Image (cartoon, rainbow, N blue to C red; front, top):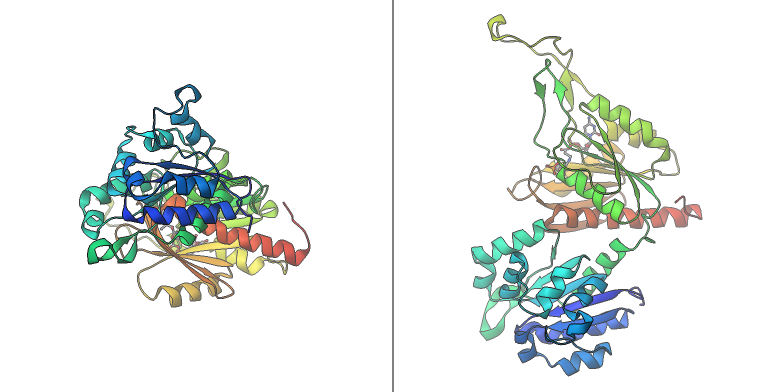
Length: 414
Ligand code: PMT
């Protein structure tokens, strides 16, 4: 019950009828051991009494940017927070956050916060679906903010639809997950996590190659989140413009065979291998030494199979089930059946199936929508979120598997 002991949570409340639920969330957080600093907007104060939150949290409720000038209150609470959550988040507050406005205590505080931020939208359906709100939400997601909800159900005034704030226990779980992700004593701390990312290139001649649309975003996000959780990360990257995440060792490769060699170079020390790369299954049997010329006619390019790196790791793994193997797959239909077949064929522990049927998930884009399938039958659906958030959910699953392996082997290898 005290899984948030020592965690300081900034609880921002903005002005909607759902503000009353912030009191329930505060109670859950305090019950789990968190220190909760509530900050109310002017609108929230019309729906929820500060005295209620003060009674639950045992802390002075900040409401005014002019309150405590000498103590730098407008930035101090943000700097001190381990996790920040805005519950509920109105359309207006989402817009202010997206645009970096600093016109009250909540927004100045959040501008000063570098910790994970969760926002829980609550508003009428038309307001949620308005392109302006959707654009603001996209900006926030792109910045790594977790957008939780809205839920679908009854709304104020007899309306119904998407726009309800998520229930307090769901918000509590998100705070717990964010707090775990920032703790350096979690299951990934000290582990060696190998991540492959991007699309391999198979040379046809010195200037042409067979490639694919992978940008590397998903793999780079996994590397960044794993490093943030205290893992030692080796990122084996096919050509990508993306900057190397902080604290990550990057090994640049070009072809599937380069990637194969680079993975085997670090395999002995790996606790986890995550294969987010889109690896070419085939390569030209031989690359021409000089540029193929149009004048020489249309070339016939013979293809040969590349090594299947993941399947090989799955087949070679010893009986101790290490390293933990995570594969990816891109599917458009029958996600569960196709994913489960690939999970078994590759001998992986976890298979992350991207829903690539829509334009906001899978290759190139900043967001993803996945189903995480585990060898023992477990399934976790991750709705549309930033690739950083999706990475966090995948690494939660990996963390559980590492903890279970430790329990099985009677100790940590970390
Ligand atoms: O890079 P982004 O633009 O962010 O896009 C992310 C992504 C869509 C590329 C990523 O999330 C993803 O799904 N990667 C796997 C793509 C894929 O379709 O893989 P596959 O079905 O070809 O292979 C399945 C698994 O086997 C993958 O883990 C792959 O890395 C691995 N594999 C495949 C072929 C091969 N020769 N060796 C392998 O290890």
